[in-house]
Image 1 (cartoon, helix red, strand yellow):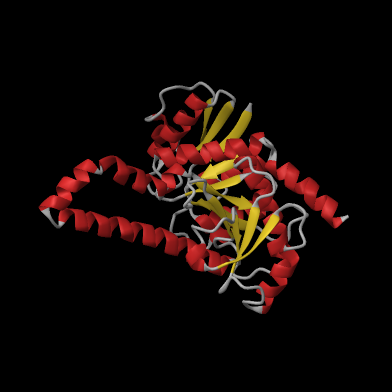
Image 2 (tube, helix red, strand yellow):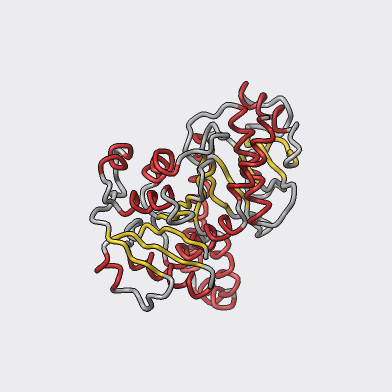
Length: 332
């Protein structure tokens, strides 16, 4: 059985979304066993079965607006997030899914689950939409303000192995987000990263990718420092949301627009779905000793189910173990 820890209290909508997403995962995967950490009476209200699901009492919750995540992780030992992370450290579970505060999960991953010895940095790596509908991995989306070229290289290898096992594509294309496509563009660290990435035998190096090509380039993995990556991610999310609002306004602005929307209902639904984060799931925190999946704070039950599905895939395919073997070979 694949055993996954769940932060039952994380996210904007609390245990209802988490429990319903967990139940959906159990329905779809008979090799799953889930451990939910949180307020048992609050979680039990939404429980329809006790088969392959265990509830563990956690007396506190790390707030979504927590400003000192290090203090929270160290002091709130009875928090649902901390207890779930400790279950991974102790070998009770093999990975964790949480919709709780991002920085608390990143810090908790560092302090409790621990970084792979072969990795110098960790990174937040969401899957973002793409024109070809397959999706891409973007990293780092906020764990590190700056990354050295050797950090970029290690994280690119991690991402390539994840892509191979999640998307079933050997030797994925890795693109370096930069201010221009031409070789020789960018800062000194970008130039050095370019030269290092093109030497790898573990993936194909696509070259530089400008921000306006993030969703349309052929690159499967888009890599940069956490400052740039977070700006790119938030720009994509904001643009998608704004496009949806503009489209809605234009449709409602005239009688014929409303009539046209009726005929295009299926097309509009598909358009929305292609940018819907709930269809993707969560972001894996790369570089840790076990899969740690950050579900979006506003996740609904579909999004949380997909985050659990992601964790299962990473555990089942032994992604972390494969990364560790490759990095040990490189560092010999």
